[in-house]
Each structure stands twice: as C-alpha cells, then as structure tokens.
Image 1: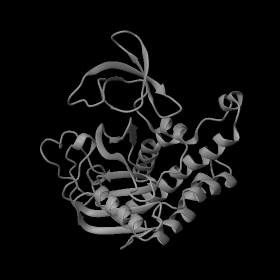
Image 2 (image 1 turned 45 degrees about the horizontal axis):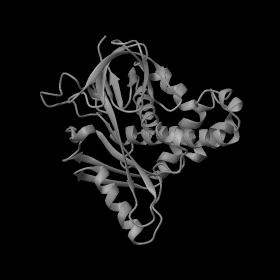
Image 3 (image 1 turned 90 degrees about the vertical axis):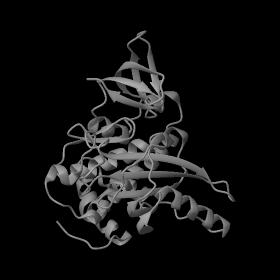
Image 4 (image 1 turned 90 degrees about the horizontal axis):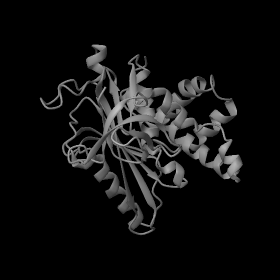
Length: 311
C-alpha cells in the first residue's frame, strides 16, 4: 500500500483513475462510470486541513459566509478536516469523541439536486464510508440512517446539516463524517459501543490514505446522485418512472446494510422518545425506512429519526 505524507486533490484524482474507475468498470459500463465520476469530480477539489478545530461544520459555515460576502462563488465539494476536534457533536447535540487518530471532516456541497435525491445524501455518505472501510478487509455494514458498524459496534458516523447563504440564498448541504481509524481508546460510556479500524486490524493505518480513499468513494457516490437526477429528468411519464432501473445508490445501500429484516425500536430521538417497536421491511425510493409497527400492524415510512436493533 502506498504511504502518503500529505493529502492533495491531485492524489485523490489519481486514486480515482488508478483504483476506483477500474473497479467500477467491472459492474457498470465504462461510459456510465466516467459520467458518474465526472458528476462527482468536485468532491475534494479543495481541501483545508487543520491540526485542531472545534467543529469542521462551523468552519465550513464561516467559509461559506466569507465567500458570499466577497461575492465569490463557493467551491462546491470543499473538504474541511482536522486531526482533532474539541467541540464535535453528533445528532441532537450529542458529544462526538474525536481525538487524534481518526478521520474527521466535513464535505460542503452546493445543493443542486432534485428533491428526491436530496434525502439520499446521508445514505450516499454512509455507503462511501462503508466501502472505504471494507477496502481494508473489515466486514462493515451500514445502519440506517447514519451509522457504520463493524463487529456490532460503531466505527463511523455521518451527520448532515443545511444552511442558506446570507447573500445569494444558495442552499448548502454540509456532510460531516467521522471514522475511527487509529483512535482505539474511548471514554467509558462509549467503549462498549465503539470500535476502530486499528482495533480490528491490530495495526496502525495511514490516515491520509484512508481519507483519500474516502474522498474517492464520495466522488463516486455523490456523482451517482447527479447521474440519477439526469435519468429522472429523462423519464417523464408515470409509466416510465415505474419502469426505471433501480437507483444505483439505493441498490448499493441495500447490499451493504444490516438493517432490513431487523426488529428495531424507532424514535425521532431515542433519548427523549416517544418510540415504538417495528420490523424493518425495506427502503423506499427516497431513502425512507419502511417499518411495520408491532403495536398495530400498520406500515409506515420514516424519513428521519434513529433506530436501535432489538434482535
């Protein structure tokens, strides 16, 4: 494996060309592969790396405001990352442990997607994380909506936030990603629930290489969303829509997931409730979780929230 001392957009593009494109061509036509990567080429064209930040997302918001105040277009696909985060939070403001040794980053996107694909962005980021971790021989799975599990423990997580630019009114989607790579010491409350790549592989990894591979996977999976946008615009009638091939991103999510078929407890916020038990029956076209409630047998689709596995 190559060892790199510093991340660069050029290295990411070389990785896409040398590793990602040949791998994707095994399953999809070369023409489609190149089209998807062309759509996703903005990912990591600009990388800001810091030794320490409070939150990558907060820094991304500051940069967006600065760009707009200067009347300059924000570079879609910018990555902000740090070796260590001191004020990192997950969903509902929960503390996120982000010491040195992990990949901690935010991908800042200008939202140009159709509504049906905007809700799939967290799933796209999850697929990219899972694919990256699996590159190292770790049998990881995606858990709806924003966790990556290995050996039944959390190895990575995703958080998405949105903001509207103060001057131009552009909508931005901020995708926060954290992967436990070499950080294998966790606070007591998190230790039974968390794991790192080092903890599984019993050796330290090149963090920059893990990050570069993640950016290459993000380039592919974000590119799919724009590719699917184009296909959606080509299929106009309801008949055409119903007979489209399966969404490429959702197809890969279904392949990588360990959520469908499980008994779960669902809530918008599991710490504060209310909640209910259900059986997971599938994923809808917009990334929503299809649940059959245990209490009344009704089928519902949840677009956001969180689950805990019961069996």
